[in-house]
Length: 330
Ligand SMILES: Cc1cc2nc3c(=O)[nH]c(=O)nc-3n(C[C@H](O)[C@H](O)[C@H](O)COP(=O)(O)O)c2cc1C
Image (cartoon, rainbow, N blue to C red; front, side, top):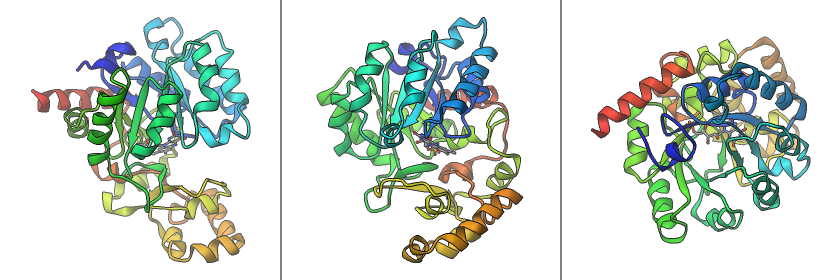
């Protein structure tokens, strides 16, 4: 299946691995790149030593496979770079030129010149139409339209858009104002039906998080994956509960989709109380993480969790999803 996106990045399938913090490590990014997708390391909160380790792992796994190496890139959480961009700077100083850099959740413009100077394509993930002009100013080659179905962070519910209408609306806007910019759909895509639908809606490809989070090469813990595979798509929710519990100072416009577990339910309607006095809830959360008890610890997945019933290798997933989409589109 070829599109402008797959041709531009030398891919065999128009799929990008979402740069999932603490899940898209070197093994998963390398497996996706080797399988012909865009393998984006989860640079996440920009922790330099984590990135150095995972980047080295990906480089060693792809050693000698020059075409797969050209499909290895990275993503960062933009507002966190505003505090410390040393991981981005380190990556841009490496001999290997990243295939792409994806920036999400913040203003990409302060980083655009550095990325462009190195000749690296910029991918900007957005959740609303009104965020597009800033990405165009930053010179983004690729826009990711992230719908509220997505796992992990996204726009909070007062502002969030669903993938199904956001993608074609952004496709129209890009066709009018930036026809050379490519568009990827993200949020709720976990099988060939989602990939085919994204193409029909006007996307050049997709970004997949949740589906690849549950794969053999993911850094997600086996217990979290087992909990996710038991859940259906009704069992996730967006809120700031786990950000407060994890002591993450996310900007107010974003919140976080994960399994709506017992600890989440306990606090989801009492956010003011949780924020005012988080100590006891944090202690319970920390104990849950230590015990790998997913009634208390978070499991970061989106609504697509209901479409997943196994955790095979990334290569098997790419093949399965691509073939199913091709058959549907035929
Ligand atoms: C476990 C997990 C961690 C994520 N971490 C990040 C991140 O660090 N940076 C980012 O830009 N997006 C992150 N995302 C969101 C993805 O970029 C993407 O928008 C989302 O996974 C797409 O929806 P899906 O989960 O339904 O495939 C994460 C998603 C998941 C599931």
